[in-house]
Image 1 (cartoon, rainbow, N blue to C red):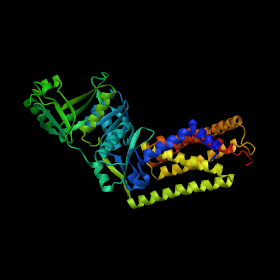
Image 2 (tube, rainbow, N blue to C red):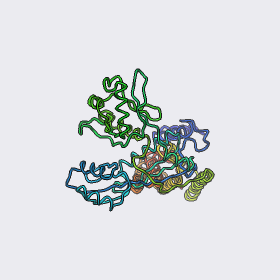
Image 3 (cartoon, one colour):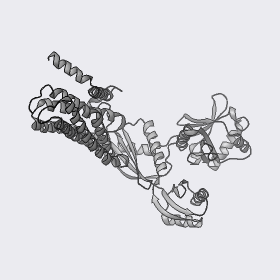
Image 4 (tube, helix red, strand yellow):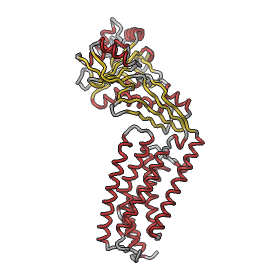
Length: 494
């Protein structure tokens, strides 16, 4: 290589667009194989593979509950309380005219009860509110994490009306029996009272907790968050006896109430002075645990609610569907996906070579495409599982990426020759502007799929959007600089 060529290569590598692309390629390889060490996993490294490629199981759950829009002349909170007592079940008022009834009832049954209590049913839908759907998702994620299950994907399926009708679990590498156990497993919740120092005594278990409310501020508007829960009659009696026997009613600060889930302390606080006075004489069934103020207090309240439920879902669920993909079939899909990607790359390279008949153009074009795929996979290790739909998105990105590189190449070659640098840059900017408009169109088209609860289709949309963004802001500008440096060395007819 001559000194002039070496100098040109160094200048090209120093260009910030080319340097950024190379840095991201190195970062992506490190992410896939080094941090954390993923070389033992073979070619896949740290890539998150979905059950399509890894094998595993999926379960789709429906809810034994209803969301009802209603009308009443009474205060909505009072009306919801009356409905809950009349139905003898938990009712969650999440809008002024919408409530979630956490037990299975027909519309006719509800219309009768609502009419008797001064209201009427406007709409009736099976499912849960979006808030409850997200809570159930969080509970299931905690279960999956506690059991050490990796490569899990949990999606809620929510309509435009805000009602979550299904939740779907996809557990790569997990058989269907284990997946069903994860859904049904409940932790061991216990309340103890501190006696002296680090010593404590058992008071009651989670089966003595009758119901748990959602996090609220008390008093309303105070900013102090907490979770209310009610005890069974026997549980309230046991709690009163223990509080008096161990000094929690006379010296609350020295005898804190401790809540444990699977042996780990999840909450500890002294009795409220007013509650301590009441417990001296009577059992109290309605209790409240305060978690603090602001966003921190709210997050702690949400976590405590889950702990109080001991991992039990706030509503009963039915198995709406289930299935599995064997590890052998997953390996087959994985192999075929790699083969499909390689063939797509080779086919694209052959077409480009046929069009230009010039290795000096084809090689950097293919190299840029490979770099784009590597960067996309590196970013995907942090944010997205790869399943068959995601692989389809990857191949689609490969095809559209080559299209855009061809646009750049055709635009910058002026009448079969490489133009002057000023004209080259002008034409390159025009090509990039065309590409950005096309990219914007693609992103807008993919956004609905990316934000809607359409399971694997989200993976296709997310990978496509990521690929488009990487191309527009990283690899296309770098290719423009590289192709300018290469073609300027040989400015003859093309």
